[in-house]
Image 1 (cartoon, rainbow, N blue to C red):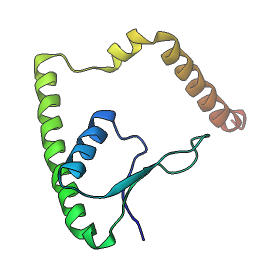
Image 2 (image 1 turned 180 degrees about the vertical axis):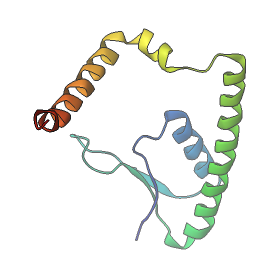
Image 3 (image 1 turned 30 degrees about the vertical axis):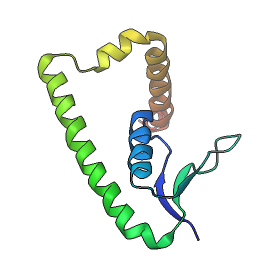
Image 4 (image 1 turned 120 degrees about the horizontal axis):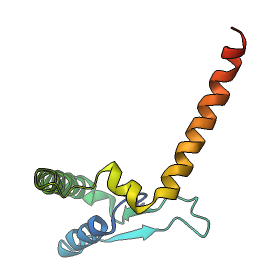
Length: 120
């Protein structure tokens, strides 16, 4: 019976490509399930042979730690050089989206607090 290796929801494309390369370079049999037509199923990577699971899980854990350390160093470098994306960069790229979210938050706060203010 197949064993789930990794849930693929919100996994970046570059990380997924690296994981495929890692599994294929070690001749590990696996398959992928998609999120389906409506995107409500769980996309995942599955290991075909259950007996390989402890070894493969250890290999993926080691890869995750190495990737974390590498990406963290890249982020720290970008932050120190002033090239890391900030909230203001995102707001400049998509001002209407930020304004819409801000309006939604204000409306939600208003309707959450208004009943208590009317008691005063």
